Length: 239
Image 1 (tube, rainbow, N blue to C red):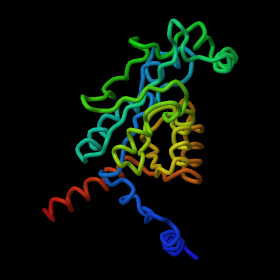
Image 2: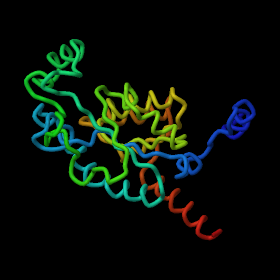
Image 3: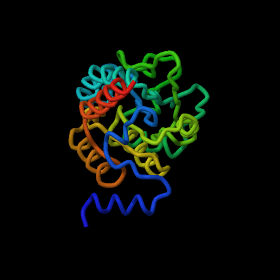
């Protein structure tokens, strides 16, 4: 048996015809682009991660190249959803003992002495030109997964979304956690390798491998854009 035969068999078993190609998966009518945690605390000098002494160069580079991909998605008619973290509040609404204990061991003052993604702060703001436009849904989360106790799933179901294109930071934490939960909620997951970033290259590569093996399909932003452009051209020729 080969992939084509297995896909044909899958179509006989499934209640919906599987989307077997990248082009089918990323059709704008049923695709959402998720932009995960592109906030100054995670991407900019002076933010939490840079204060930790970690290498944010990959995140800084992503801040510069992601706006062009988001613009391509908008032009294609893809739903663009921004996801942001909100962790620190004066009343400590969100940080449990479990979270704070982990932070005390591993985060060099983050979440304890150093506020993280506080409402209304520069640190919690979107980084550079990676920011929502009027009408874009903005999902606020308090844990790694963009689905956990948020309205993301409601937004996606209301817009008949079947495929999530995942971008943002950090590849091996919030992006991967969201990919895992999206897959188990029966969304197709598409992860462009150049659309996400981590602070250690090996972590990024491991996440892309893990997603491709178990939770979705990895590709590049260029390949996704080529699908969108081809579909737009076909639509124009048949109009």
